[in-house]
Amino acid sequence: MADQRLVLEAVSALLGCRVEARSSSGSAPYMLTPQDLVNIVSLKEFYKQEGLQELDYPSVGTISLRDQDQDQDLYSSPPALTEGPSKEAEEEKEDTRTLVTIDPEDFFDRSYDYDFTHIKDGGTKFQRGGEAYVRPCGWNRIALRVKGRYEGGDDWLSTGPSAWPVSYSGHKMDGSLGVILIRRAGEDGGEDGGGDEEPQFLEAAANHVLSGDTRGRGVYSTPDVRLAERFCGRFRSRVDGATYEVLLQNRVHPQKRQQCKREAVWLLYIPEESKELQARLAVQAAVRPYGILLKKI
Image (cartoon, rainbow, N blue to C red; front, side):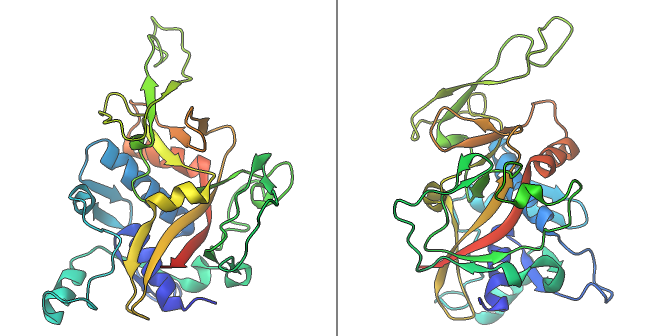
């Protein structure tokens, strides 16, 4: 079982915030939930795609997106183990990050942790929700406490026909994945339009320079953990000094995601007229997290 301090560092890396563990029975401020986690991770990339530099999340505060825009490693823990500024300067820098609190007992469900680090599936095939499930072999999964937390029961989390497909989300998973959105007359359902809101997609090269007018507008994920690893976050742990990669493992509503023309890329399309609340509710209705993946490199 992964050290809780290491897992908290992984959550910090995903959020780009300073995460502390506190009991919800005390006088602690708002406690982040697993759904908040996937909302923030998804919306960070979406708002960067929209050209914004900050994300305001209810009861959490303002999260800066500018470090990522400058190609810095936002997901790194403050570099206390590397040469550079003094320890005092680094601690001061850490204190400027948004503070987020979680109750580990309510946030994690360690009885469902599963270590895939030394597992190799080979040609064995798995499915979830009628889609291929590429298990995260080579990763250590820390389970999130999500059972019984959503209306309609837990079938979305099952292996049966009502299950939702599995996807993975990581750093910089946006329009650069090679999807171009072609807008059509009347797409917004106006009086003069046909009301057909289903977007069309065309494949583009992964290294194509996409503008805000051409990239697919929304939240991206992939059912292939091998592709997600190319976009994972990284942080250097203060617990053991090792460097780790981190991803989120989710389930995605099968009717709310778009199958992009590029293989193994899914898009939750967010219409242009959507406000911040509407964007957050769209993610909340379509993407549910159930694990944090860690890999030592």
